Amino acid sequence: MALKRFASIDVGSFEIELGIYELGAGGGIRPVDNLRHVIALGSDSYRDGEISFPLVQELIAVLKDFTRVIAEYRCTAYRAIATSALREAANSAIVLDQIKTRTGLDVQILSNTEQRMLVLKALAACGERFETLVQEGAAVVEVGFGSMQVSLYEAGKMRSTQNLRLGALRLRDTLQQLNSARDDRECILQETVAHELEIYENLHLLGRKVKHMIAIGDPIRVLYD
Image (cartoon, rainbow, N blue to C red; front, side, top):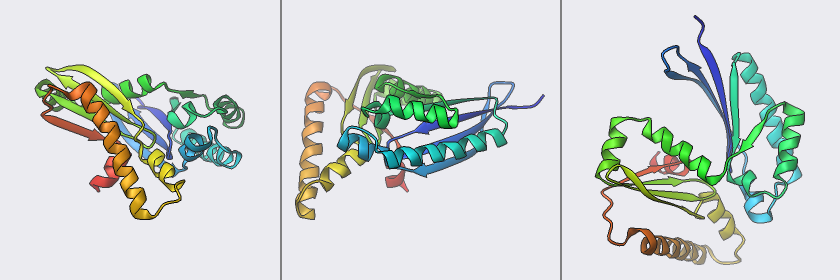
C-alpha cells in the first residue's frame, strides 16, 4: 500500500515554510522535505498596518514554487496557514484572494488562540517527557517574530496563557525607527522587555514556582545554534 503524502505551508511573519510528510498506515508521520524562504511580511504589517505590493508579489511567487513541489511529491492533501503578519494586516482579505486566484491555494489565517493550541498540541505529542515537566510545573515560552506566548502549567494542567507583543521582528523594526544611538536603542529595548515582563510577573507569577521552562520558536533555535 502506497504511503500518503501531506503538505503543510506556514506563512509566517519572517519566513514561509513548506513541509512534506509521509503518513503511515499505523498513524506515524515521517518528514520528507522542508523548504524555507525568508520574507519579512511582519515588517510591513506591524509598521504600516498592511502588506506592500512588492511583498505580496514575492509571496505569490514563492507559493507558486511551493505548489509545484507539492505536485511533484504527489501529495494527497495540504493545509496552508498564516499567522500574525496577515492577521494584523488591513489588506489581508485582498492578499488571500490574490493567493487563491494566482496559485490555487486556500490559506487560512489562524487566530492567536488557534495558533497557540496547535503548538501546545505538538509539544504534548512529544509524550512522556513533556507530561513529566508540566506535572512538576513548567512555563512554555514560545518566542516568535511577532509576539511571545507564555503558558503556565501546574500539576499537569494549564493555569494561564498570555500573549506579549515581544516578537523578535516587531522589536527590531520598532528600534530601527528610533533616531537614537545604538547604546540608547539597546537600553530602550531592555526597558521595554523588562516593563512587559514585570507586568506579566505581577499578574501571573506571584506565589507560583516554575521549576521548568520550555522555550521554543525560530528565534530560540537561532540563539541555541
